[in-house]
Length: 251
Image (tube, rainbow, N blue to C red; front, side, top):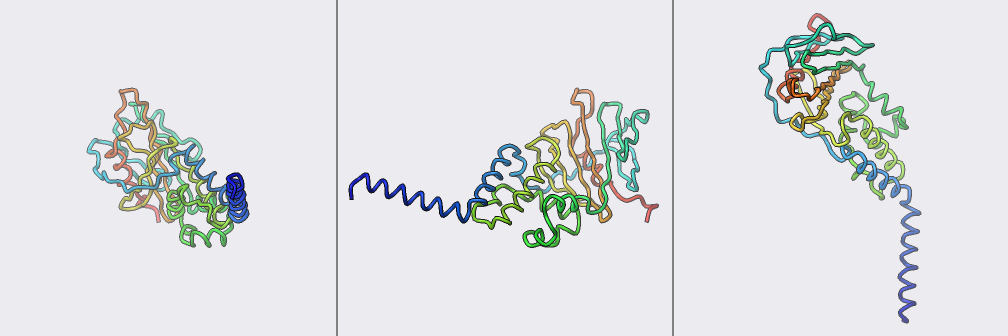
């Protein structure tokens, strides 16, 4: 066969294969590219939670605080009552050092409802992820935080590729902090949860999400990083995590 005919045959064969591939897998291929683009723009979506290894507790004198039916320890002892106040449904705790803690409470299955209102119906969600994530916000967070771009492939059915891309997009929005923050799984005597940010990398803000059957607590801990405030350390964060509990005088 003449050389140019051989080249033409190769090109035509290649185009036919590409056309067949796009006919069957085109939509899923496009969504796979979108997933990888999200991973490039928001690198945290390529991470999954790792178990927190440092469980040591700060011995620094702090104090106790109650908010919305929950008690927890403060990691520092210089709370400024004149600046600490309720803002809407959130408690702002300001310390003389400049550190701050913002505490908010969520209701049961708030995050489940957010996910279901993002383009899912119950049956289509369960067909891919099963029923367990719909039972609690903690289980739903586990599902979302375990999503990665690699799970969206060109060979998935279009409906599943779309669902996995949606979950990945929710993860990119739901994870607080910088686009490459660290994801840590945490557990206290009372609540499971997640920590967003590693204090060893000195982020300005770290978020703790703790979950219970009737809702949960979120702590946003910030430091001015001006050299005057005590640094945010894992033992200080563990004081909050390990001490958080429902107020004993409530049912």
